[in-house]
Length: 93
Image (cartoon, rainbow, N blue to C red):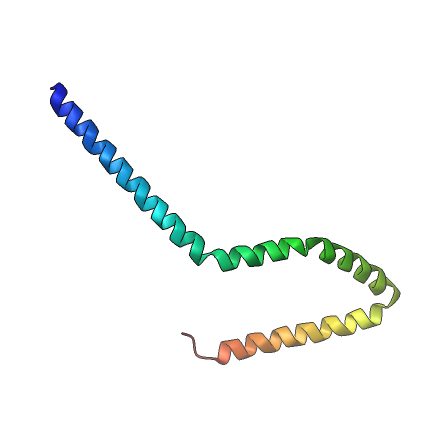
């Protein structure tokens, strides 16, 4: 019984080793395919400080000039609505 158990244990250890090798190969492939997204995310995180300063300045500026902000908001809404309408008319893939 001990020999069967040792054989089974050895087989399981070989199987575990093979799974580890497969995971390692899959990891390299996964990291290679997502490298572009990782770089983009790091760039976006790096811009976080500038976005915070920019939104603060925009908030102060919008209090001083509310009509311009309203005008740009209407334009943005118009562009967004137009994009949705065009997207709905285009054939779906």
